[in-house]
Image 1 (tube, rainbow, N blue to C red):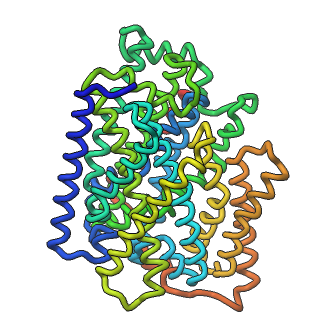
Image 2 (cartoon, helix red, strand yellow):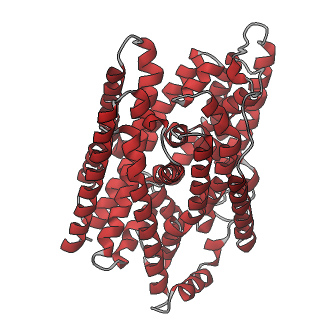
Image 3 (cartoon, helix red, strand yellow):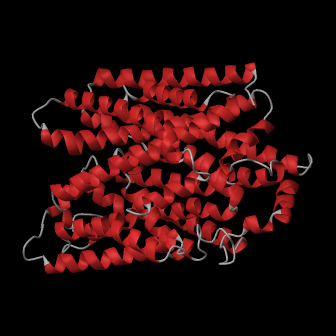
Length: 522
């Protein structure tokens, strides 16, 4: 499939328009003066609507749109639990975790770990995050994005990846987080419009032109198993989504790690004007997450009916774009690319933030602010170069990239969540305890995988979380006399967990909607 000339023109207009806006924002920043706070945290000036949009734009990328749609093709609506449970996780992050981070005025997650524990914990986790961001997240976004461009536009996947990397650099390298966050507003609007349009056209085609409602009814009738939210042990996909564990088990560990302690996500909230703006932005993101399955999962399910013989599940979303009329196809393709480049820009900005602020600056503390910004920009270029080289070797053999990403990161996720939760809410936690949890997470994960190969990875993460929790508590208590950090950042006395009435009402609404959805498709 190739884009029509008019579709290509629509896409080019989008690219040029986005670059012009990003450069205008960047020039404004230059007049104000660039330092690390401006470049990495947008001068801590982001309003709530920019935070909410940027959170979703950073999250919804190739591995979400392409990968989750592919999982929808294979698994069905149950994969939407990643989106819907994320909504309530965001509410928890906004109320209980974000106030602590903002009170400590941190740039990065490793920086908080240094304040709470010591430089060993900070450096260990910083190196881990840099490795995962470059070799897992960045490579996945580039690879799946390149495949999508090849499917839709007929351009070789390598040139597609090269275009995505270049586009990302062009609009984010100079302006930093502020350029990324404000252009994300455009990206999210386009993404939602394009995704909803694709879902509508797919359902209308399934209904032979009789509309959205009839198409959805026909789809649920023909594929009833694809609309089971809680999979039974007899389901062949149970190992990926093990029944009730998506509500009370390991998915909580995954979501808290991703939305609460993941640099390239939480960095938007750290850049807020104040805690109230950050919480409003998180509430907006929570409602957008409730909407995401209609955009990324439903097209994958519809592809089972419309394109049942796809060679790979991850071809579902790009193949569905054949339904688009001329002009709209170019716009939806632009929405897909928008999501990809937004996530690339967010990831590379966070990679450069962690490397510059947590690895480079402590080693070279006497340099100027502009020097650190330049180091951040060079780091961005190097990270993208590594991602381009390693994308195909690492991901070329996997059919469902989304599940691969979840399982790989799940090896280390339980330990990270334990370290942060105990560090934030238990003053007796020590540095040695934190390091033991970090190491134990990998050891326990691999041991359980070898001993119980049929244990679903989500259940494995839940068990590893409990094991790391016990390990860190035990090591901290045993070594407490030798090492204890009583830094003020441990104390919660000056942290307010009270929230505005609007946030409380929004949170209640999220709970009600989630309860209704799971009751409907239990």
